Each structure stands twice: as C-alpha cells, then as structure tokens.
Amino acid sequence: MANTFTNPVNITEAIQKKLFPTVMMWNRLEGRPRTHHFDKALRAEVRDALWMLCKQWQMGEFKGEDAGSPVFSKIKINSSLLSEHILGNGPNLPISNNMPMETLVEQKAIPMERNASKISLDIRLQLGKYWVKLLKSKSLETYNSKYIQFYGFSVPVKDRNTDYVHAHKEELQQWLAISGRCVDGYEIIKNIKLGNAATKDIILDPSAADHEIILNELGNHLIKYFENNFIQPLNENDAWLPDRVEYKASFIDDNATKNTLKAEEYYHGHLDWYAFNLESENSLYGKPPHLDTFIPTPVEFDGMPDKRWWKFEDYKTSFGDVTPATTDLSKLLLIEFGLTFGNDWFLLPFELPIDVISEIQGLTVTNNFGDNYWIESTEKGGSTLNDWTVFRQTSKTFNKKLFLCPSAIKVQEGSPIEEIWFIRDEMANMVWGIEKVVPSSIGKGVQGAEYAIQKRQYHEKFISSVEVIDHIANVYYNAMTNVPENWIPFIPVHVDGHKREIQIQRGSMLRVIEGDSLSLEKIKPLSSILREGLESIPKPLPYLIHEEEITRAGTKIIQGFQRTRWLDGSVFVWFGAKKKTGRGEGNSGLSFDQLETVKIK
Image 1 (tube, rainbow, N blue to C red):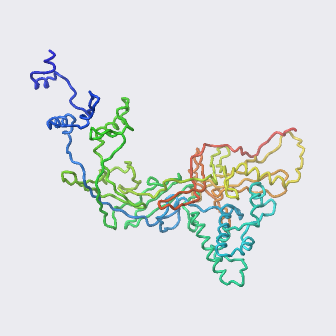
Image 2 (cartoon, rainbow, N blue to C red; image 1 turned 120 degrees about the horizontal axis):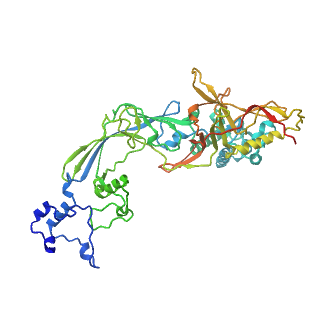
Image 3 (cartoon, rainbow, N blue to C red; image 1 turned 30 degrees about the vertical axis):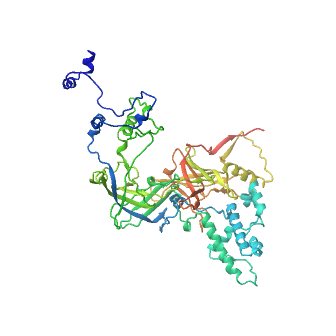
C-alpha cells in the first residue's frame, strides 16, 4: 500500500479523482540544507531545462498576460512658469523665483514704532552698529558724535505718558545704557526713504566736499543691509488679512490661458500644493510640449523579495514576521503587493524645475520585445470632481495639472514676539483678545499679564492719597468691574447694509484707579495684531473681524521671526504669523450695575 500511495499506477486517474491532494502553487521556495558545506548549493547549478519550465509553471509565471519589461520611455509634458503674484487684496506684481514660498507670502512689516514711540531697539542698534562700521571703513569716524546727536536715543522724561519705558525696569535699564551713546540706524533709513539724504541735519566738514557723496552712498549700503537681513513687504503690501486673521495669496503663470493658483485661508506655516486651488478652466498652452527620454528603474523597498533567489535579501523588513488578524485587510493587501506584485512597478525619473505648473499628456513605453505603448492618465474629463487625487489642486473643472511649489524644507521659529488668544465670553456677550505675549520696546516678547500689572502699578504711584469714604449703608453701587489691562474687548456690531449679519469690533476698557484726578484713559493694545488701524493717518481706523473666524474653541495667533536657508545657501529671515486652535471659551468676570457688600476692615 505504501508503494501504491507514493507511486500511483495511473497518474491521470489519480489527478482527476483527486486521490492525492497536494499544494499545486507556491509563492516562495526555500532550500533546506542537509550539509555544512554550501558551495555547491550557492552555485545554483541547473542541468534540466524541463525542470526550470516546471518550476515556472509551479510558481504561476505562465499565468501572466505578458512577460515584457519596460526598457525605454518618452514623456510628453506641458509646463508654464509662475510670473505674477497677488498678496492679499493688493495689485499684481512680478514674482521673484529666488525665495521660498513661505517667505514671500508670510512676510509682514516689522513693528518699529508703537504710539509714536520707538520699539524693536535690538534691530535699531544692530543697524546703528553697522552704520558706525561703514563710517569707519571710509575713515569718517569724526561724524559718529553728530549722528548720535541727531539719530540717537534719549530717555524720555518720567511722567504718566512715558509708562512704556519707566514702568518696566529691564527696558529702563536698556534705555539708560544706550541714551547718548549709540546711533539709531533705523532712523537714518527712515529719513532716506522719506526722500531725505543720509546727511540730513548733519553739519559736514567744509574742507571735504566729497563727504556728502560718500555718506549718501553709505546710506544706500545701510538700506541694502537691512533688506538683505530682514525680508520686508514692498510698500507695506502683505498677504495678511486682518479681518480674517489669516493669509491670502494668488499666483499667475506665463501661460496664454493664465492659470491662477489661489491660497486662501492659509495660516498653518507650511505652504505646499494642498494649500492652493486652481482657478483655470482651460488646458491650452502657448508653448510647445516638452519631450524627454529616460530609462525606467524598478521600484525597490526594504524587505522586497529579490528576483534572484540565491541573493540575500534585506533584513530590515520581514514579511514572514507579519501576523495580520482576520480583519486586517489593508495589511494583507500590503503583504500581497510586496510578495506578488512588488517587481511590477517602475520609476520614471523626470526632473521638474520649481515654480511651474505642469501637465503630463502621456508616456511612450518600449518593452524588451520592442513593443511600444502609449499610456495616458486613467482619469478622464468626466471623472467626478469630488474624487481626491494626491498632488492635485481643487478646481471647478477636471484638471490633471501638477504644481511644484517652492516650499521651505525646514523653518526655524524664534520665540514668540506676540501671542494673542481670542476667546468667546458668553456671559459678557463679547469676544476678548488676550495679549498673552506682547512686544517690549527692547525687541523681545514678554508676558502680557505681568506687563499690564507693572504699567498699572506705575500709574498708581502718581496718586498721592485716596479719600476714605465712610459707607453708611451695608451695600454700595459698582458701575463696572475691572479686567486685566491685557484683555482687549471686541463687541458685536451690525454690518452696514445687512439686517442680521454682524462682525466683532475692537473696543477699549478704561483705566479706573481710585483717587486718580486725571480723566479716564482708554487702554489700547500693545501687539501689532490688535493695533490694526490705530497707527493710520490722519485718524485711527476701527478694527473689525468676521464673526466666524472666532470659533467657540477660540483662536490663537502667534507672531515672531522665522528663518530658513534656500537652495543656493542664502538665508531668509522674516516676521510672520500663525493661527492655531484655542483652548475653549472663557469668562472675564466683567459685569455692570452691581450692588456689592461693604467689606468691614
């Protein structure tokens, strides 16, 4: 019986009746060593061609539709280069293709003044130090004292209006250290940009007629130094929308149909293809298509089964150690792809320049049998627009365009100079802009709560005495409670021309100090984000924010300096903002018309 089992007389009958069930297909064969010497096994000697054909049949290789491999390919592609950009609601400007997209869109003007007072002393001193260096390079050190006199620093007189210096010990020490000793380089730049010369108010040496020309040339060098170190928006036209507390930018290419890419509601700090919407509805190009040829390269990955069985495979990924559960369908599909179809994919290395919008018309592939195939995208014009495809922008009509965005690879962020928390206060029926971090005059961010306390204590020192009032009744009337001075109110107002639509408008709290003989002063914000419109000339403008931008979860705005290095090694530093989700609603404790119990001491 044993002989009959292992050696059937009629093989055809045995197979038809399935008398001997066996496994007829394998995905992988591994040798089992029976000796300590592997020399002969590693030679992989083959003496029987029929045996090889049987193994091909056993592994299912004859089930393939074709056995050709791509050896040569051509690509037909249309492309166009970005030529114009629009920041915010500004005008069309030619684009500069030598900087990261984040730098171009996020750049904001560095706040150098606040309420007609100097701030950002660190930058002013840096520019002044460079100006002294320029004077020394031309042997004009004799003018240092004159520039300190007309373009220097001086400590303001101590009174109720100079709390921005005298209320804060660290800032006062800085002002005392530089007063009458250093040059304010930014004031020189400011005067030059106003149309004045770098020698304005400076009495030149009458014996040297060429000093005026040299000093004016040095003034131009100082401006270039400032612009090279700090990216500033042209004519203060930036992409920041104060009423939306986010960025908006558009880019237009040099194509005949003017493809337009719009980045709306951008605030997260990394600008890439997914932040843009494509506004063009045409696929016409004014330029002829670009043709290029290359050799396809097989796709490889860690743990991929090698097609040469005697070659050792990578140990980093072992599909044999993967133990999927019965519900892990995605994991099973991944294993099947890696073991069965891993060597069916090829990579076509085609390089594109940055700042381009491209569209692949098709590929011509030639296999090792000499057959040519024209391959187009599987998506057609009638595809559903809601179908998501990686690297494709949202558009009104079907498109196959690819935008290669010049994004920064890594951006270094400095400590926050400003940090604002917008919260909803349902009890007071308003929104608060809490200045968590505010910019000090010396150029760094400080805690807004501590800054507000120091300022209030400074004003309280000017009040000599407080009249003591004897309360006859057990209660007294309080018209309004106080909130910290770093809490800026935003109240709902109706939009002009609408009956129900509202926006939130910046308001002001009063600084109420018991015994103060001066008229009540309105507390103004210190951060440039909340001071929008206050510096406008000839009069301040109101600041309105769309109600939907401040959600119940709150909104947090962080603003500070950012730095990155570009492809050619150049360094870019700019002042930009980010928007993040807040930490929920809040309660300021603000209330009106309160009867409070008299506290007996």
